[in-house]
Image (cartoon, rainbow, N blue to C red; front, side):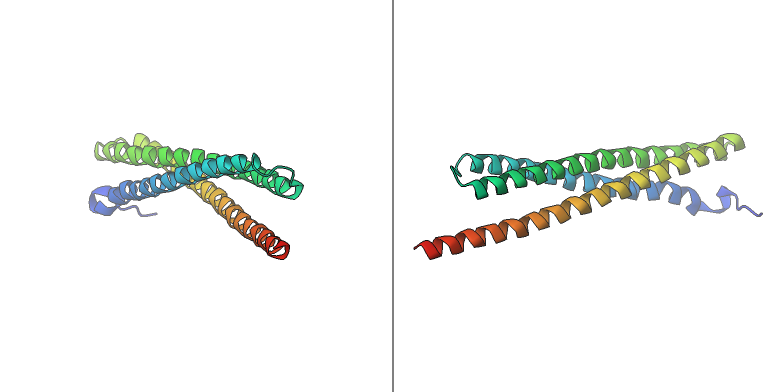
Length: 169
């Protein structure tokens, strides 16, 4: 097996540093978006709770609002889990970039066992970070699907209420 020395391939270290840096940036953007979604769920939970205080004896509306609160709880758990994974991935990519720099220095000074250990450690941490990022994205897709389903359900409810009021007048 023929290996090209790093001194002959300047893109090897650059790739090892840039890839985690780009992924770190992607994680940061995802974490920001996830945090914004958490805030929106908190706002919606407060609105639904306030609305429950105004429904009076309307059992159907109260049941609907309680159902919405249950969905908001699930959504908030998904978002918090996704946010944890985003930060785990963010730290993993940042750490793997640091390990790439350390591995490059070890290679430059000819410390082969250290270089190989750094390469393996960087790879393992990078794979773990990608797994965390992928799982966070899956949670976000699930939460988004729930949000869209909830909007459709809410629109149908309010359409039904509107028709009921039109018939009553």
